[in-house]
Image 1: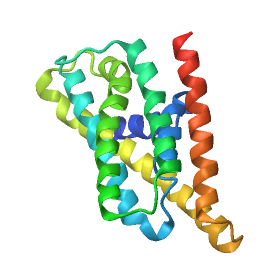
Image 2: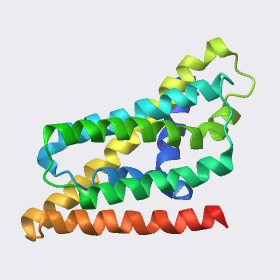
Image 3: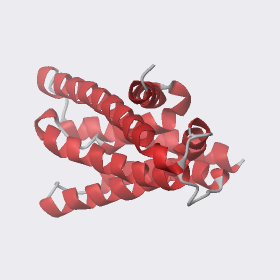
Length: 193
């Protein structure tokens, strides 16, 4: 199988794997405040997150950084909880708040990338540092594609519920962010026990 296609499929399956529910919960919680009409902002937000975890995957794949997985397994649900809280308490979206969201997505992407690092490093066994570019690019492209499909479906559900069934977007955000925060709190407790 072509190397590019192999790693692309690995990225897609990694994001859609229900064993890694933390990643799915994070991107859904991250996008809970957006509506389908804001798809461009959502696309930028998800791409900022992907850029963040690409950086830490590259550093990990090149063995430049090594992380304490227990610490990362605690920090990942903390990022979800903080995102949920931010979504619930923030006021009307302004241009400045959107920029904060992009920064947070990028920063939290760095942390989530560290969570991928052991998986990615194991895929890179026996591959030289010079050969990491294609696997890294195609793996992250697969993750980005998978995230965009999931968020596209999520925004479509949001549209149906808010426009067709007249559910208030604020209520949608509270339910989704609350659920994300609840899942994250459970994950934090499990990581600490």
